[in-house]
Length: 130
Image (cartoon, rainbow, N blue to C red; front, side):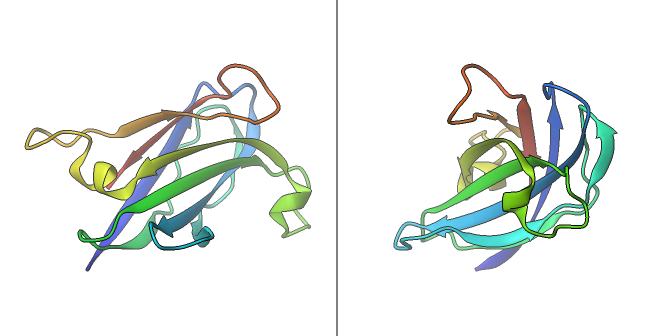
């Protein structure tokens, strides 16, 4: 097991917002997602580049999936994410992020489209690099 630092950024969000990303991890044997961290809030941005990284434990022998949920912080005084505006989510395998999506090549950020279960089309894009 080794510790991995994930750096998250977004672009092409639908509008400028008070953006925050919440990160979850799930191993293949887990039934539920576990929250592993939150970024800071970036105000008034449609292309937030989060400074706070998320530290996760990477185990090469276990399949681990990471879920990124993007929120617009509409009620800053309320700490519950359910009180905020959900923008969209994206998932990737942690191994893909660690290797940068390339087998033996230069590590590149992994790009995913943010999707919302009640909206058609893209809600923006997410980049993550380890």
